[in-house]
Structure formats: structure tokens, C-alpha cells
Image (cartoon, rainbow, N blue to C red; front, top):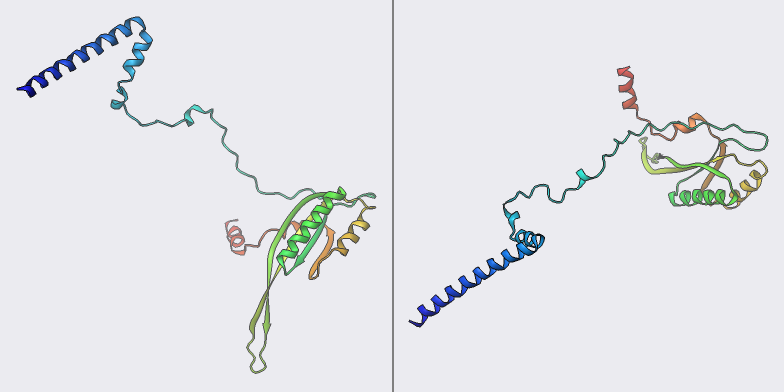
Length: 210
């Protein structure tokens, strides 16, 4: 009997609370329409709405112009020498030890920056491999004993002062490491073509197409 009375009083109490809540919401919406709309918006009405497109923002950004394709690298104009300055020179560093070749080419580049010599480019040439063949004492068939890899770096100078050149070369020769070869010569078109690896298969197909 007591349980029935308790259930009935609990149901009546919940109804009174619901009615009081409705009256409070109605009064708030009349006095403050904005607050009332915010209160109604907190009832999670978005559960019935689709969720696709949430988090996307790219359509809000301005449209960018399409990127242009990079043109094929072309040879720069070779500067000619004058009475006071040299033209485009290639300082070539080569050797079997890649670390020494790389460090010495960096030293040359830093030295040019300190002396105010303009460095047009600094790049590496394709590595060359040389097979060392050995013939045994007994027999005539030769076999590969070792493979030597030659690493080359180019520091291309532009407008080197003629009065500074002797001092510049003296400093380079005094700091030249053992096993490293150094050469300086004017830049030519053949030197530019040597930067790229030969692809005979591709060249043969291109010849057949033309």
C-alpha cells in the first residue's frame, strides 16, 4: 500500500516539475526572445541533420591559380673574359674519397664568399666507376679485382678578378688534400652536357620517333 502511494506521489511530483519547466521556458521566451531561442536550440536538434561536409574549409579559401609546369633546365649564358676579369670558370674537384671531395669543394665555396668572388653554381657530376682487372699467374681469364668510384664536384666562378686570381690559386693549392685532384678551366657547352647522365635507350627511341 505504501509503495503504491509513493509511486503516485512521485508521478504527481514529476508532472508538477515538467509543467513548471514549461512555464519557465515560456516566460523566458516572452521576456528574452534571443535567450529563448538559444534555450530551444540546446535540445540537440542536429541529431536528425546530415553530418557530411563538417570540417571542410577549402571551399572558403580563395581559388589559386594553377601551377605552371617547370621548364627544362637551360644552359646559362657563358660570360666572356675581359682585361680585368676572367669569364665563367669551372673549379673541378675530383677524387676517390667522397668525404674529402665534398669538404674541399665546400672549403672552396666558403673561400670565394670570404674573398668576394661570385659563385654562379655549385653542383656534383655523375659518379664514374672504373673496374680494375687482374690476370692470374696461371690462366688467361681476367677477373675484376676492385671497382674504383671517382667523385667530382664543380664550383663555377663568375667574374674572377685577374689580380686576385694568383692569390686565390695559391691558397687553394696549399690547402689541397692528398688524393684530391684540382683543375680550373673555362666553362663550355660540353661541360654543361656532362652534368646529365647519358640515356642511350631513350635517345634511340627519340631518334625513331623523329
